[in-house]
Length: 122
Image (cartoon, rainbow, N blue to C red; front, side):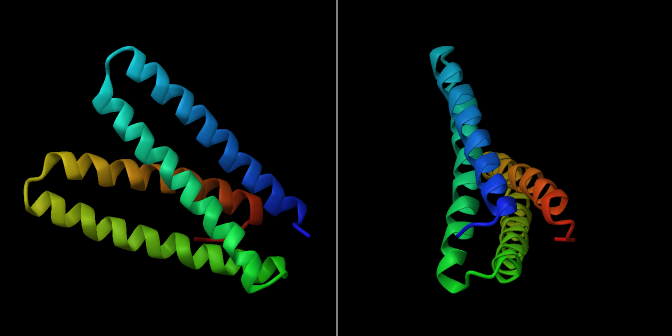
């Protein structure tokens, strides 16, 4: 049984994914494929986080344990993507820089809502 906060957070992730996918389709229709590809990356991050939260149900039915699991995953994603961003900058790979910045921006948005939902520090 999912708690109200978990259900609310999953609904938020679904709504943002849907909104981003609509933006992606508009960008493709406007022949702005590069921007659409970045939006696809953004939508993917929301889906990854949703999958992690759903997977946490297999670990525990306790909300606090599920939240702790997701909190650790979010921190791990941030650390990894920041390393990738630094490496891309060092190699002068502008496309990779923007991809990693897009991931980190989506993650920051998710972390903000996560913190507000559970009043935790990520």
